[in-house]
Image 1 (cartoon, rainbow, N blue to C red):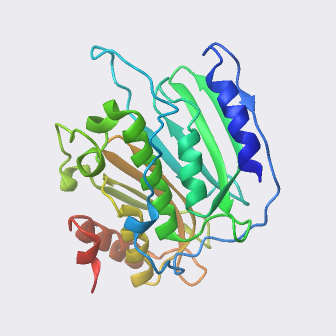
Image 2: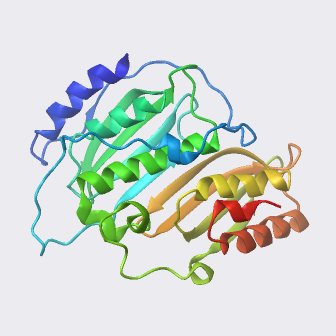
Image 3: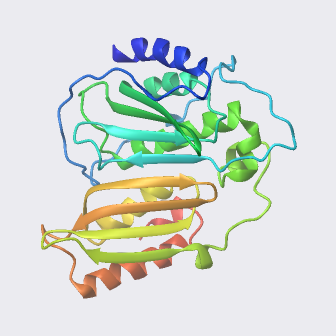
Length: 277
């Protein structure tokens, strides 16, 4: 399995000084499958998110006076046709993320490629992941959300100082954010034409557990299909971009308005359970 070799490469990289140039790790070919928002898992997100192991391989000590960077987790379905790309950034505080890779394996996933690079904003770790059972990219929204929550849960365990910087800190961390976002103020929704056969939907709102699943459920309930997309967790905010269509065509203005109004209405509701019609 590709994951085993990548572990060793990431360990070696985590011990390098931050002045080293980027390195590229392993790659395996996988098959392509389109994003399908209608396929669902039969088990809940709570059963999908495993706890990290008791040995904190990435544990580091930081002074209380250190400025805490904003954690970022990106789920990218656009840039790789064959795999789901996950990028994690937390200043220069990320270690080898071995436990995160182990937790993803527990979700029935393979890490087929990993890339670590440094820039002025810190260390960026990218994983290309596929379903172990099919060798294909992840398409189920519930599993995508489980991946996101698993990564954030591990980040909070190994870097508890990130707790107050993340909306999930209230649910999973040791300290809730001091300042919560007003959903009405934070929510921004835009729909753009992106050619004759699809539209680009941009959503920015206050983050919460289950948000990705909620968004996709709203799309499917009004028969809007998702082709691909990117879902970013940036501190207290969630930022998403989806390529969508209606019966193979871009969304006409009336449907764009229906979609935007539906999202604004349901994003004010606090739980997934409230999203049942």
